[in-house]
Image 1 (spheres, rainbow, N blue to C red):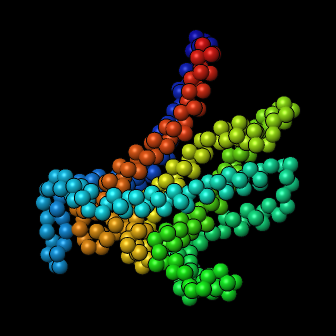
Image 2 (cartoon, rainbow, N blue to C red):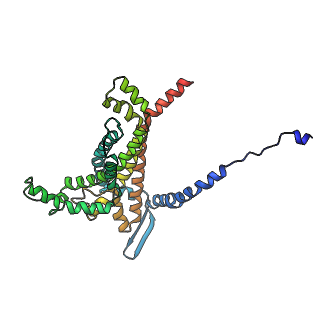
Length: 316
């Protein structure tokens, strides 16, 4: 009787082990394909390790010699090239993406054929960068269609050598990066704007706010997390820029190495089998990318974090 009347003891079931089981493949893949190679790269950056013909020299520990050699060489120039080309391409990218996202999500404009335009602006993102670079190489060559059209319209008398001028080559690389990625950025910003509560716009419209005021006071602050994501991913992609300038200039970075990027410089060391210098370049790029992304994240989310702290303080 006592055993029947006593409440049954139920064992608590923990499903945590299944969660660890499902996330284990990611951590294993990250360990094997990312963390171990990263540690190995940093380790060999402190060694003299290269191949001279059939002879392998090293690894011999040299400390910071590889890093000193890099900064005494042309590494700052290549870093400046990379950041400059990224900025030239990113500024119009974020401007037009914000503009198109605001237009496509504004129900009052009633834009027609939105699906068609969204598909068109996203299509360059599906084209391989190598094919894009070869296309622009053919279009903007000395005897290409662009020069032919400009001459036929009487705008220029002689073909303009786009690929022989510093401004022309940098502009083409930045323009290609802009065309390839602004469609993807537009879709992300559209998703962010569509996630904003419509009641905020209705209340602002009742209060007499204009479209410009609603964009700057409501839309832009509320999509800040997505803007931070777009900026960080674009910065990472910009620092890793390789395929477009490599193919467009046939790996030379000409004229005057003005479009030689950090990854092109790294590729030269890997091609020459200078593993120590290649490891040093990779480590510098990793540290630089981490610091810049951290600064962007902190600056973009500072107001949101302070606002949440004020809300918590008001509740308590």
